[in-house]
Length: 207
Image 1 (tube, rainbow, N blue to C red):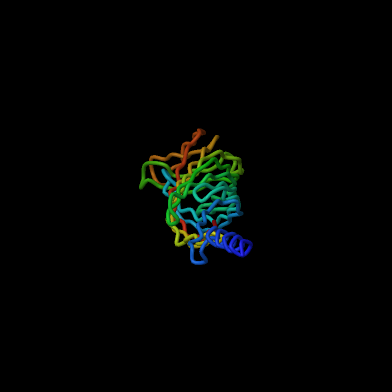
Image 2: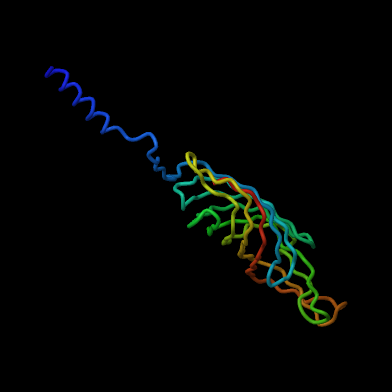
């Protein structure tokens, strides 16, 4: 009889120690997964007001729910003979699933060449010296919104993104042509230039 009572007590203690079947399972997004994305952008090169169209691919690592780092690669083109191939490294912060903010250094290889008449007086042509492509250091800053929402158990967040990118590039040894009249021969100068290209971006990212 004593053995039966002892066995009953042991089984009761084990049952109380077990977690109820309907107890909530607490999960946390710890990151640790690959992330990737694709996008297309359109914007204006400032101060030259030249249209630029860009395509980009992204591949990297989602370190946690909020932070990720990835490399970018893409190409862009504009009217007048401009073209760029760019690469870079971006660090991104997502405080909530639907908003992201990131930035990092980039390098572009290509040339800037366009006509930008000032209506009789002003800048007529802008081009690389000798129309040759060259490397250009720069900086990319980006922010936007996403339709993604992380859910357990994987917490992966695939979704469409709509955002803004500001691309800053430093151009060395640019040839600038100036003219006082529309059809007079331009006076050329060689100097460095910094351009800023604000762009609207539409893409898809899986974080």
